[in-house]
Length: 413
Image 1 (cartoon, helix red, strand yellow):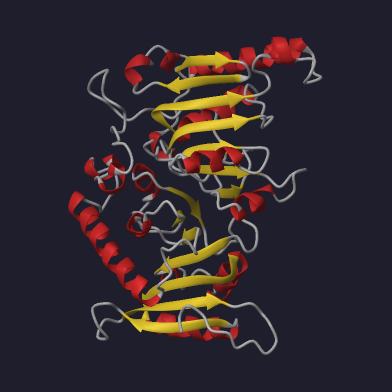
Image 2 (cartoon, rainbow, N blue to C red):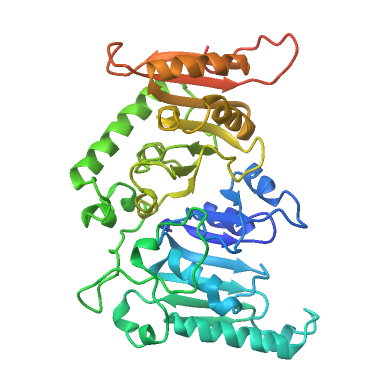
């Protein structure tokens, strides 16, 4: 099976949907709140499944528009038809043209299950009616309903949806990516322009793994200011070179020891692309203060990621990542927040014996190395692969178990 770029799953257990799809070479971004199931996100990450703490509430999801090939909800108890269909509009925003929305559990098949669910059938009937009406208003095509599962498909472009535009409020297209701490809006995100009814709005994507190294539509169309086809290719080539040099220092980088990996300043996702392996996955984080918003490009490459501000805690539990990569993060946040705070957050989410790779200016890394050593990380500074005259250096570190009198070695020795 070719990997779809990413699926979005709001789940109620421990991301078993995402775990099943991972075995099929399909990446899933699962999210759930901390509720009666307690640390379900932590359990998912301990299984090696991508997951973050999150909730579909009043704030937009921290993902770009047109990110996901499929969105899935199984017994997540979200009132989809409430609030003028606000939650379905948000799903529509992050769903790619031609993508699917799958709903499993209440109220689907309410005629058979209302007694087992211990809810009035009239209430369930009304709930499904509102969902059906909102899906039609969003111009989704219902493709399937069997048992407790229903599936809709988002149209590939606006040529099929001209009639609906007179019945809904369209969002400002410039707001589709402006999501950090922004409230959801009762409006429909417009499709990118197309020239005919067969064209996929936003550009058609190749199957995975070809998608990984093909120029993404957002780059090819010039949608990301300051980025070109040539700069994308150069970036991919550069990070293959960087990753090869990493492997000469950390020789177990791609042998399966590190499963959950985070790139704190992902750029175009080229670090993750260079690492691509069925043994691991990478959470590509695009800082909210980054000069360019590249998270949409990351998703078009078949990878997953999230927006985040590193002056705040990341939406995960302690000890949930095996390796953290950070390119230029400390220079980026130099005047925003303290390096100590960022390092402590890295220490919080990193597992004991987990590894860190930091790439930055030598003056910055010298300060970071001093702090990291005081945190009892094993550290090793190395020159840029092009030689010692380059001011950019790389700091490798391993988080140790805190054991009195422990002088154990690490992968850096």
